[in-house]
Length: 412
Image 1 (cartoon, rainbow, N blue to C red):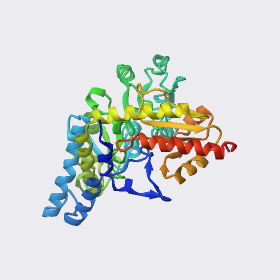
Image 2: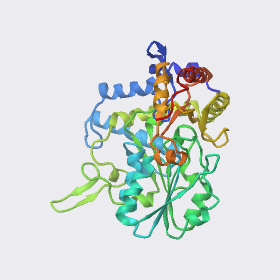
Image 3: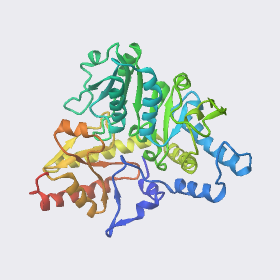
Image 4: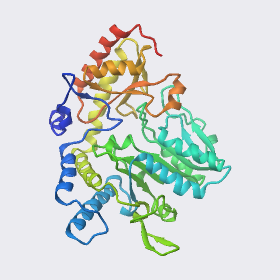
């Protein structure tokens, strides 16, 4: 099991106070905090070898290039990709999905084709397909949810058709905490000749991901969800697919040669990495991977399962709490969304913040899902490696106090 007290010491921000109260950080689904080794790696780059990469023959440039590419190699191992050429650095999960939408989908899909999504998708895995559907006259279909907040696969054989060309699904819901077993869907999609994109933005922090075992075709995630800096995302794709796809952006570094009237493009992965990237943050992301690997997913998953069970047990016993998500830890991550009776989540979120607790209040970039529940939003408490039972106890006590004061307030 994790030594949470020891882990907390690695995160400087967790020593902060909010209005005189110790910070209790429960907004990890939005972004995780950063250990000092990650913060130091950013400073070290700018202080000691700041230079542009891939273009210089001087010492600083070569050192920066080596460190940058070491992160790519580590990502390859982290998700068990076949080749480093399958690892594309982007700004975030959203950009990774958009890259597939613009570079693969716009060149391969036509009117009458279908894309299968689900009712629990983040906007980042909806809007790119909305825009594509309008442009190409493509049909979007949705896997509904069961009463226990899981994918309802009872009609999957009718939702998947010979016209289905892409299935794009989240591996773990950022609202419900539901972890989706996508094995059978991927098999059925491939049998019909469809490709599968997995949004792993939430899942990557909580479980090991093996793209070869998953047998998907694209996978997207962001480093800021796994202790790394903001502004660094990853798109993994099968090498053959990426090779055949045209560039997403054009300009420096993604070219092989340029003439007055034409250009030839660089090899993978650089074909998709135009311009100067966020070098410092990519390099620092390697430290985030090293930190997670040193802890190990087995201990992370065991810790989160116990902590989530503890939180669910306490919240279920709270009077007037409405939970949105599976009520047990089976195929469930440590994201817990709820409302307190009819109190508006924004109002409740402010009261929680006044107690030094950071949670997310709102629709969590999942407005279609909120409409399914006929609500404007929820409070979301999301747990990670530096959280413990004491954090849950403080939240529960705050909710009890809040209801005594605000129980008469009706949701706006």
